[in-house]
Image (tube, rainbow, N blue to C red; front, top):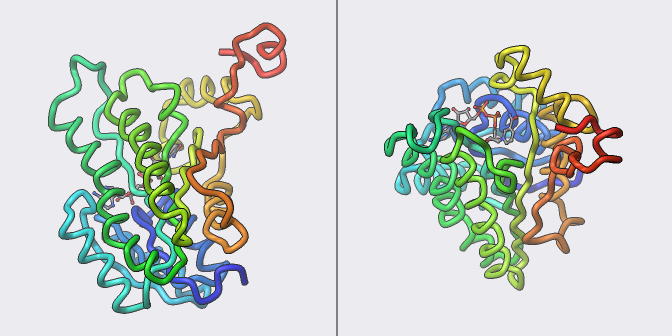
Length: 260
Ligand SMILES: NC(=O)c1ccc[n+]([C@@H]2O[C@H](COP(=O)([O-])OP(=O)(O)OC[C@H]3O[C@@H](n4cnc5c(N)ncnc54)[C@H](O)[C@@H]3O)[C@@H](O)[C@H]2O)c1
C-alpha cells in the first residue's frame, strides 16, 4: 500500500472533499487525524476505522493558531509524527459584490481558508523537515486564477494559498518536504448538490468534460501527491476541473467545448 505507515492530518474532513480525502488516504494505508469544527467528523472517523486504519479526531477551529497547534499535537501524540498534511477546510462566508461584502465575512474567509492553512503548516512542517520527509497539499480552487464574481474573499484566499504553496515548497525543497496546490473546479459535494438547477446546468455547460468532478477524483490526486513517487513534484498548481480552466472563448474551442 503506497501510504503504509504514514500519518496524515486532514482539515475539514467532516464531509465533502475532506471526507473523501481522509477515506482515500486510509485506503492507501495511512492512519488519519481528522480536524474539523463539526462534530460530524466522528462519522468520518468511524468510516476510517471500518476500513481498518486508525483515526483520531480533533474538534478545532483552524483559524485560531492555538487550536490548530493543539489539534496537530493531539494527532501526533495519538498516532505518531505527521507525514502528510492536507489543508482542505474552506468556507464561503458570504456571496456579495465587493462593496457589499462585510469586513467580518472577509476576515472570516481569510481566517479559515488562508490563515488556517498557514497555522497547520506551521504546526507540522518543522518535524517533517527534521525527519526528512513530508507532503503538504493545499486545496485551492480554479477561483484562484480566474476570480469569482461576488466571492472576492473566497477567491483571494484561494489565490493566497498559491503564494503559501510556492513559498513553503521553496523553503523545504531540500528537506524532503513537498508542498503542492490542487485547484478543483465544481465538485459534486453537499454544497454543490443544493445549488439551483439553472446554476448547476450553466456550470456543467461551461465545463469541457460536461460534468462535475467527484470528491473521490480529487482524493485520488491528493493521494498521489502524498506518495513517495511524487517527490519530484513541488510548488505545483494542479488543475482538476474537467478542463474548466481552459480558454473556451476562441472560436474553434468554443464549438468543441461549449464556450461561456
Ligand atoms: N465543492 C467544490 O466544488 C469545490 C471546488 C473548488 C474548491 N473546493 C474547496 O475544497 C475544499 C472542500 O470543499 P467542500 O465542498 O468539501 O466543502 P464543505 O463545506 O462540504 O466542507 C468543508 C469542511 O470544512 C469544515 N470547516 C469549516 N470551517 C472550519 C474551521 N474554521 N476549522 C476547521 N474546519 C472547518 C466544515 O465543517 C466542513 O466539514 C474547500 O477548501 C473548498 O474551498 C471545493
